[in-house]
Length: 120
Image (cartoon, rainbow, N blue to C red; front, top):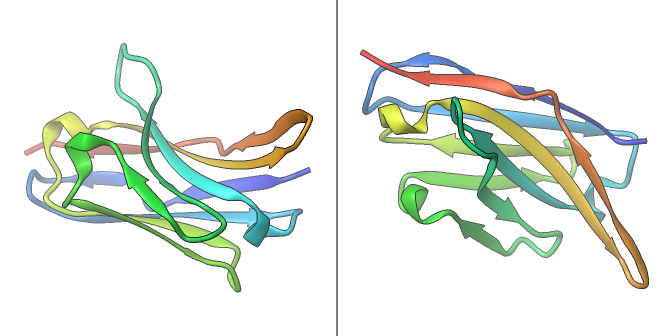
């Protein structure tokens, strides 16, 4: 069983920065693709950024150039550096760990979420 624990959320003014962290335990972290998702109030959960086990990254269009996802396999932690935050970035942010298994459903785990509020 994989446990994911997010931290780093909070209240920040527009234009400010936050760094989210997601600590993983219970598995071989380096084998997993790691992602950050968010769910704004009253909306669906959406992918924000992903980093594969091979360190390839991709970002949702609205966060490109502002957010950076990174991972530290030695610390089994994935980070999301969020800069130039906007009110529309307000959401609960969730960490996700996913591992494909040929011929079988992927392994898929979620953290409990951390709240990010961007407001003046």
